[in-house]
Image (cartoon, rainbow, N blue to C red; front, top):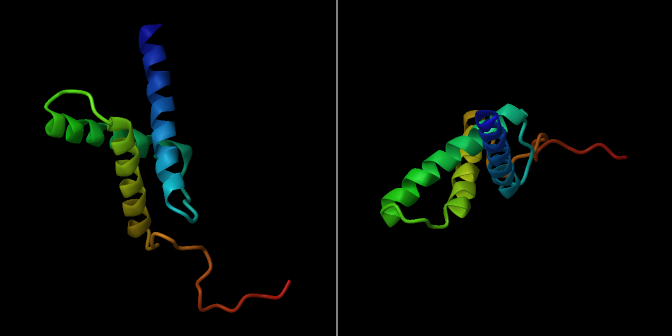
Length: 99
């Protein structure tokens, strides 16, 4: 039962960190829940390594750093898909239809 609980908590942790990383950037993020969890877990791992290198193994503000790294990873995913940080689905030069 211990391993199953660990995996569930790992999933929830990745979902929270990845979700906060997605919320930090405005605009649409066409990502699945699995990609959000993956970004959250990768960001937590990278932030843990960075905080370990900075503080020498002592605990620091790794949750805040995890959200910042997740925001950076979401930005990189957007750039790889051809979007910008504040992109929307409709280009600005296209005229809007009256309602």
